[in-house]
Length: 436
View 1: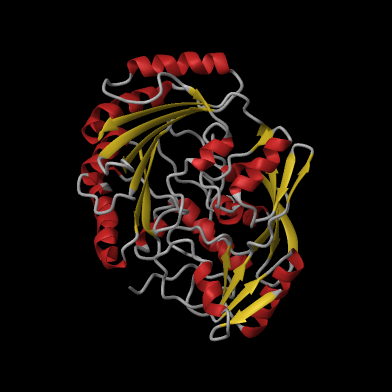
View 2: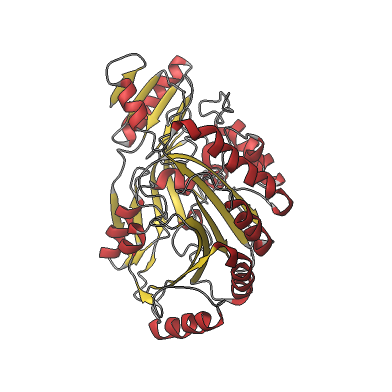
């Protein structure tokens, strides 16, 4: 176990390098502990308990708003728990395992799981907050619903396994509570799926003013489509000219390549005119999908999300707001989902027929205020169509009122009870608001 106290040599390098967002928050744990296995995690939690010290859990540090970074207390870094092992069709995965590495290991065994959309996202925070990953809508809506059990360290330092049969309330919270989960995960037991052998994509680029026609078309396509198709509309700046544009991306994950080509070709024929791109659907694999991530190299970042049941209207609001985007690296993503359906009983309880995410990305520190204001202003503009938020990618530090909106009323009340029952001393406290 590796410990660094605040003020010691190497502490600031470890703290700063552990933050993916280049907009580094001025928050300083008293101690950063890097564990390599479950026993070291348990030892660290026991030491924190003996010292009356709160513990904040960190994985890759890829969270856009750095919710794991707290002032004071212990930061417990689990990125070293990155083992990946198959047991038949079950994957045993450490919380520090990167999405691209999990994907590659499973693909080698002919299996797949809805891993995160960015290669560097580790599974710990991703799954605890729900886990919106590749083909996730088809594979259980969220990755967390494919978590069958977890090895955890409780607030007391005790190691145990939780599942639907063992500590069922804590297991309920593990599937979606995000930063409100009150234990440290040391291993996930994951249901996997046969590897799709016919991944195809349809990609078209349009000018920004085509957004209303595109959102109306995609909303119509989304209502009745198969769930193994993903419908995405993105707003971005052309990397060469800087011109604002819309990008339509339709993905199919499955094994029926002929059907996919027919469906995607028919979709292309019905698409609004004026798009540019390959003449038809193109084959892909997951390595290529990871290589095309919109959030590649880390920059100064501000982000937020909403769930909505008025996806086309919300998309049009986002498109209008993009006309004043201050930085060309900023992206907006609209996921046109099939009608929101039943979710299993779990902390992950907020969903809609549309999901919107916007990620302000810039490099000049002098424009921090301008870019963050743009991110906040879009949240205000989308308020009339906002149903809720997604805890993994919503700024719950600068706008703590949004944390409550990531959960239904009944789920929020149950989460409070689970936290009282399993962490009565507040060893794993909620993220405090950012004082800025």
